[in-house]
Length: 381
Image (tube, rainbow, N blue to C red; front, top):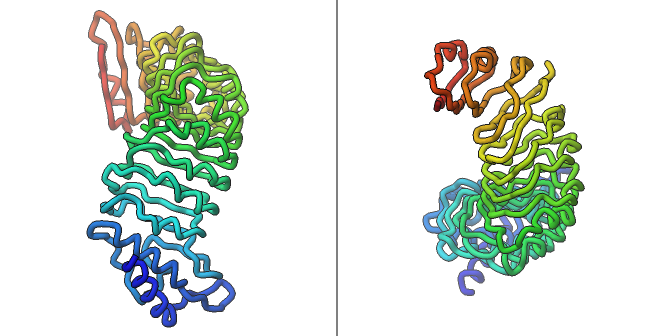
């Protein structure tokens, strides 16, 4: 309390000497309370690497800070990847910056402390919230749920984070304007198998969905078809079962589909390969999934194709040479056929190649020298 009072006095004194230039030529003072809250936040870190955060200087010019030039209020706080180490978790002072629109604390160390249950709901203007790779632990707080204007939510790579009480559905249920949802490594298993239906009912405008290693299970619900604006779908390293749904072929903006390391079965919908914006398809290690490679048109823009551990039901088509942009290929073959090798050797952009074969004879790999851009090679037979 004493520290808070002292900081407010200092900020008030300094504010008479500090101004930020407004967009219309007027000057706006760096608001006293904003500077005070930021200094409180600074003192919540061990040896903070924030050299420009000094008393009696313009807080709108501090590194990682952006202000509304008309009001002097802090609207951007980007402290990502600054090697900050928290003393006791996220400082309550942060939630006094109620005009924030962009908040990023990713790539720092909060010492496996829990996110506060309440506080985020005060940041009602927030558009971007990035808490990824910050050594956070515990329940995703209910305070995020009221942030109805939120466009991006990223809490990836905090292995100790999870949804329980409140549930995944309860937290995302009000985030109807969300465009990007990244929860890689966040545990969603307590929500059961209804995760896809929860998304379809909550975030209809979603463009990027990344739920790698979230403990997902069950089938992809038919309601998922309502997420028609999706451009990137990353659901790798889960236990999702059933067939890959046909309606994905109707997602005209889809550029990335990563379903690796799941339990899919049946026939992969060939029509997906014809999506004009498709750049990346990862299907590896769904052993009961069958993939029929189609005729690839000359205008195809595929850059990544990973099929290791799936059942490719027909030989690689001659149109494979049309994949002029293909940079990464991973393929399983019962026999590393000469015709397949000849086609692969003509891929001009290939940088990464993984081939798994089970033939009895050692293949001839002299053709690899034709791949002038190749940087990574893995061969198993």
